[in-house]
Length: 224
Image 1 (cartoon, rainbow, N blue to C red):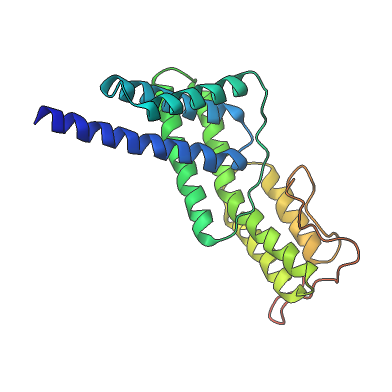
Image 2 (cartoon, rainbow, N blue to C red):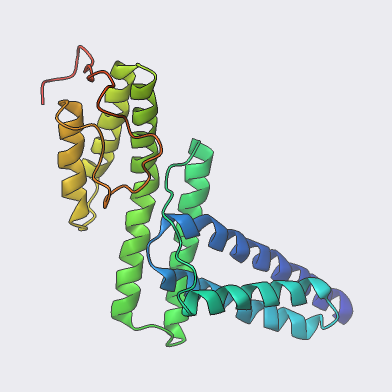
């Protein structure tokens, strides 16, 4: 009975290790601060070490530990900088990203109880996760709008941009970038610009060029 219970515990811990690894991979291109990744990797390393004590002969755990510790070392040494890519390809991908961001917040709160970060740092990182939570929807819609413009479907493009703007307008997030996003989307929809400023949206792969057609708002859409 004891061996069976230990075996079940090990399997639960291994499943959580896989979940944490997936969270790291999922949120890395969605956030700007490397420290969020560091705290999640700290949680992962701690869990792998606990699991290894119960299952010392596991080659799988040795490989996972070495990989996670190497990633931590690279982040601490500033040898890797995550690149933002918040343009996702489906509603399911957005849902997975938002779930991972929510889980990251829970992990940060746990690490804060271990005194790894201060309450003010926790608040700052939670705000960043909340911003990323909004951005995966906003940036994806803007990307869809850009692609629609590039293929000449300017009415649909307008609708995508409008939907992105509505998300931001209904948001209560205090990040000052929200207002600039709203303003620049208005400028796109009124054909005064083609794309969002680079510092707000570095995902430029689908940015329209100056030769693309002007947008056409739907008949039931009031003038901006």
